[in-house]
Length: 342
Ligand code: MRU
Image 1 (cartoon, rainbow, N blue to C red):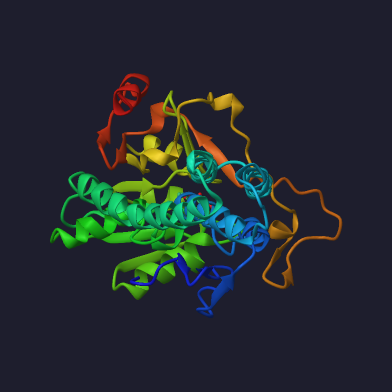
Image 2: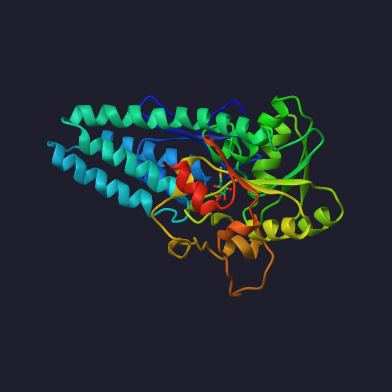
């Protein structure tokens, strides 16, 4: 995947419309930050690092759109944009990180034109850094994988979930680039199928040996020796090492523990939330129609009650290591995560 998931070009934000993949590769262009907010909400762009950078680009657009005559008025406009963008998705902390960083930079600016320019520059830099960080993370994580490993991954933590290269899939890419031969098992990841639509697409496109399984086959593949390592991404990691990621991650981690299979998480420092405890994290609940149908086909009775959480929490005792751009964090997590930020 050499194209960028999200990018700033000529005063607009360009994104791959991930809702259309794998059937169509369509790029969408936004010049209004409210449309970027809608795109985040509707999963046109998704994946924690990609929505972090998209949020920052949204703030840069909001600054360009503002008709403020004073710095103070511009900050008020940016605070409004911050709230609208923040409210789109509550679980991935990267979104807040991207929004806070841009708002802070704006507050430090002296003139309107300085603020407008600096928001473009800082958000473009965040996009570039994302790829550099993913490559570092990939190199660090590749040491954990051996020749002929079959690695399971859940959801999509690839180039499409970031600006490019990926976190968990970045580790798999770097392992292959280091000369090791690896196979991948991708879970389909119901209900929105980021695994089959995005991970399988991305890895197949890049020439990986990838097999797709239904989410319900995780236990079967592990019990039958078809997998020997797992690596997933994260939407938020709190200081105790509790990992919030796509719904079903907890099941994969529990199964891995049951079968003695190492379970790794790959995430940049921007995914760590040092201010919240596990119980403070809001799990996004999504609409029932994601569960009651597949595409346009209805697969459930009318008016059925649906519980559709988009994320779950994996406790630290199920995690063998957390791969970051600063190295691999091992248990006890409370201590090692603290060290990571010192
Ligand atoms: O609902 P999504 O598609 O935004 O969920 C994405 C995930 O859960 C990813 O695993 C996570 O954001 C890590 S992406 C590098």
